[in-house]
Length: 377
Image (cartoon, rainbow, N blue to C red; front, top):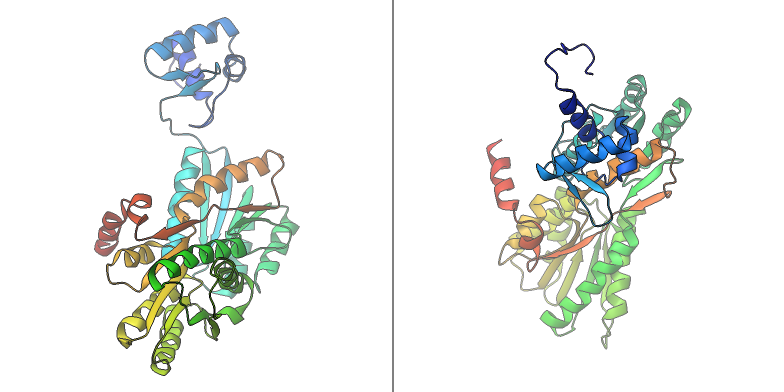
């Protein structure tokens, strides 16, 4: 019976059917008959009759493996509380991650509590302390900066709160994010084909933006160089030029513009390790109007980058997309496995995707409507 509710109008068969439906733990759950009967606290024969009735009414479906799937979306009560510490929620890439995370949490019956440090490294420590005070079961930490990572990780460890660190590794935490060197290498291999097709294999220089920063930034662009050199066998090796700047819009814009003022001819690939710098480099090339044949290739693939790739005359030829909209449906199941005491690898890598003008509409058919909504907000 339903606790605290008036029961004289209840139909017992309907209550039992509701127990069966509630026994499905998620939209992906595929339990067998015996498992459902145990979850609903019903005997096997009663559960079987109810399932067959629900199946005939279109509420459940039976698979070929004699498992059952619920066809009814059910709002679920939160079974656990997960803290979400994020660096500057308003950033495009992080917003796409956060939107997907909220959706996945709702689907899995998880209460997600967000804490935003607004990009302030000092605030990141205070956010970690707030997460601990909230007594969450697990924390997903999406804050950049290698300096602050060990500090917040130590706090979570002392509080006994398991942590999944997104994109930036934290000591003792499960890592979730990009395999940066491999992503770069795959991007470089694609670039080799592009250079052969569009520049007949002739490449004068490769510009590495922010390669001197080290860490994930360096891994991406250096991996791209390795992949490009592996596949592009040319008579003369291209020069490698490094721009010692940050992978942000304004620094990249200034650095690339200054470079274009010095170079008068040649074919140049500019490798940008993050979305903000990608847009800075593209803008610099548009303003320079140089006779140099220059192309930009980036990493990240947020909405602005994807829209720029679509422009017919854009110098942005593609990027390695990290698919931020998919993070949530991978992170929440991983968090639940950790909380259930199941084995989870120390590093969980996302599946990256090369995004180009040829496939961007197929991969992201709703981008233009999303951009329109963003413009009106």
